Length: 387
Image 1 (cartoon, rainbow, N blue to C red):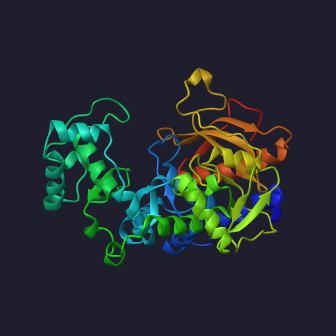
Image 2 (image 1 turned 90 degrees about the horizontal axis):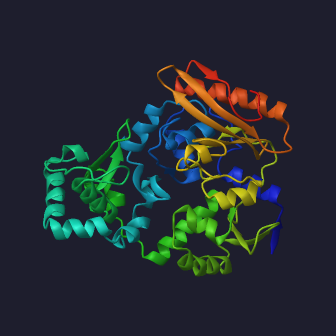
Image 3 (image 1 turned 180 degrees about the horizontal axis):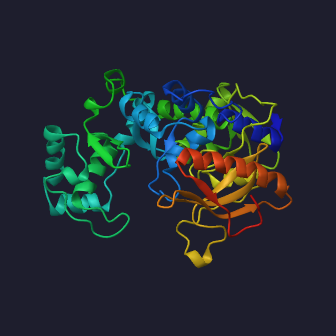
């Protein structure tokens, strides 16, 4: 069995994620977005907007300054991207539509859907018919959207119906520039060659998605690879073992990891220094916290849902990648009214060169502020880093 050091595993992982490529020298266009999706496979969506919508941040981390409106146009108008449950709600290459049809077919009604069907027979179908006749529509466009029943997931009846139809694949969706979800029929959004492609049986879909996960991670445990597209781990394990037996994946022993890992047979180990970057909490490099800890010896937890007095580092904390390692973390907030990027806190990891980190971090924060349209940076009030 081939062996890798942790440092080699880090290089392989960052290489697979596109961090050894230089940022494009000119305007970022759909060619670069297409390549980015080839590298990372998907962009996870999240509604928290304290800094910026999360799906914009991995693009900036890899491509540098780009126009968010260009990414919006690409993901909505190109016919190359669709939204579905990939790694949570995600933007995915449209080639994967047939690979996720098994997930749509297995989408089971949750409690609110069952209650809606019982209490309002025919309502879900009426929402679907309204979309057929009047779509595309937002929840607010429905003739009878119902009222919210609380914060967060307290959806009204219209939202419940639309999300159920979306989950089953009967309808699809895309986002406006302000992150509003617009619902429509798949035949009006998904190009025919992908919509009409035969749905892959689950075993074949798993095999393909795990192949992609290995390509995007370079090397990972069974849990790492299954998590990339949120596959059922007990189902994925025998598929991975069979793929390794056929040589489609390579079993790897990574120093310090428990049990075997699997690698893309074409995995490379870049030798130059990767680009530095501030990573979204939902970036594939860190979204699996256990994997980030194994790769980088960096314990990371998002504290959005932690009461403020109990937070250790802050509300929206981004790990900082420098010299191929996670060396610091920064709590950031965009003050749009004042036009400032507020660094609420900046913390170097123990034993790191704080002067070097502070200098590099200042450069990257200035670049981030410029991309966000902020006129300046407010230096940190908390932490052990001076920037």
